[in-house]
Length: 170
Image (cartoon, rainbow, N blue to C red; front, side, top):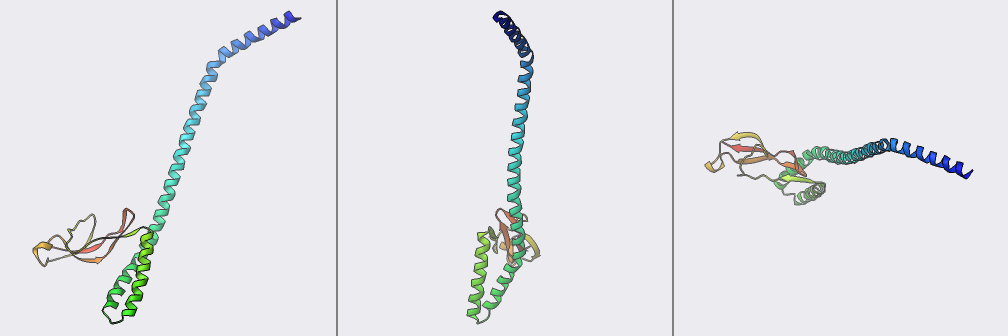
């Protein structure tokens, strides 16, 4: 009985070895293919996560940009109001308007809004300024340079959301 069991076990073992030898390359190939699929899927998912994070940041920036652009006329109105009130003798009114304007400016600066600095006498650059008109230069030094700034420019982070509007000398 033991001899028959040993013979049966040896036959089964030989069959298993034959099957294992026949199928082991297939199993290894399948394993390699599945591993490759897994790695590709994992890499694709990581790229998806990075892309969605980037899209969310861009969406946040553009939403913020729309609000900032809509507030720019309010900032312009404050500048005009302050210059007109400065012409009067109402110092308390000027101080009150200045306090409100400073608070609004500080709030917008904390959200990333920056005034694009432009001064009279700066060299005109079409990439950084918007020329509204050209007038004869009062002197030779101001030819091709900024004579007056009509409207301030603003940047949100690294992106200019409104170019300064200037008058240049010819």
